[in-house]
Image (tube, rainbow, N blue to C red):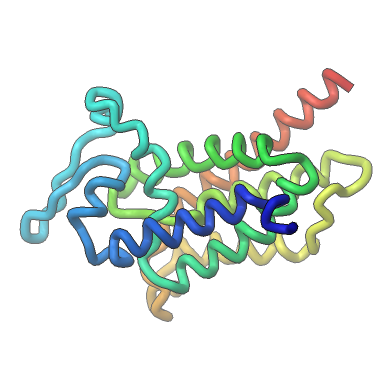
Length: 206
């Protein structure tokens, strides 16, 4: 069955749905504080939160990943779930679950850390991982003599335009909310690095 072949892709999507419902799409701030990159509390207009070092001091290592599953609207989740299924399931099918899982860990942690560094803990979503999958599949096919993933050439262009639009006010103006631009950019870079290193390792043992 297809779900057995792509169980990690499906698990990520379902985890995103579960966590997003758990935080009430961002309305349940107390629950969000348990799952965000670091613990926070709101005092009037001020947002108080711990530094990244608290992850190690309090052994709250799950926070490296849990922001990835928090979404703040149904459309936010649907958009990310679509791309996780399209891109992630291809990686699972062509290269195996462990490759996909390793890429997920690398991109989720790096994009979450980077986004926290510039904006604090109020962010979430699988978008950084989506951009990592895009960068990985695109560069892997560029480095190979024959395409493995065979994605439409225009896809990378579209996603780069979407990335650029995130740095403008347009997406917020049309009602899509604030965009975690740093997570997108670092996710894309993480995917490119993963593809480059993976290709080099493959050549060493070929």
